[in-house]
Length: 345
Image 1 (cartoon, rainbow, N blue to C red):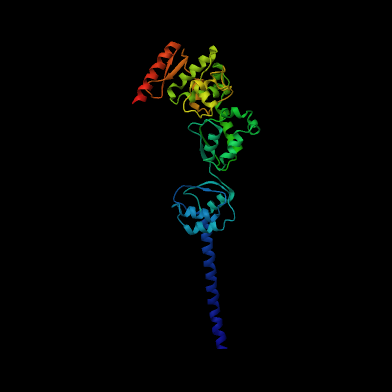
Image 2 (cartoon, rainbow, N blue to C red):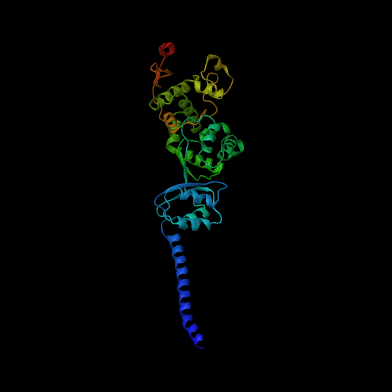
């Protein structure tokens, strides 16, 4: 009887201890849940990619090595319980909790990336490589789209007019954008560029937007020196107005797929509608992807009486301009003398 009483005296203590233990476990779990959901767990901003085939464990390793995680156990708890995540480019910041990162990955809350088109873009293949190097899509898919009449029909153009809807710039897009979504963005920005004011400026030059892009691509091929681009544009506009052949070397280079190191007289006879030594007027479309500076150079072309230009003997990238062929020949001889002297050194 005495033993039974002693056991009963210990029972409340045992139950109390068990209750405290349960409360402690529940409290710890509630605190962890609160911490994981509400408490910022990163010391700064960090960008990362989830690529095809990656698992949550791969992302966890990436973030743990980033140097911005404050509570590694919290992040580990949330990501280890993540069942699936979406491919994309993501950004976390100092306000992000561990749970937010988990939800961001599960729901695909991406941050746009900067898709930059810069430098010389002469062919659809070069454009495709630039896009493929920055986006999830592969360059082969981009090239196929850019060269497909069916794909470009949605924009009301054919492959020769591809560079009328692509303007070199920096575009904010989702890294996972499809090829068509990327080109939709290009077309949207091209349409935004062609305001009523610019269309009217083109009309005053006797051109359509397509004509402006075509002439701008020739200007881009002739000179990278920005201050003289409006002058070069003015030369070609003068030639167009009097029915003179444009005789633009970049169009001949285009006919040979830009494979020539130097354009010689024998190259000028190639039979192509893009050969402006053989056919009058503008070629059927742009011979490269003209930057805004060249588009603006055509729209705001310098008003002058020049019909000719050749490289400056100083080899500084600029040109000498002339109104008469005799003056042009003098400029050409001066450049040739400087070239010969340079070659002999």
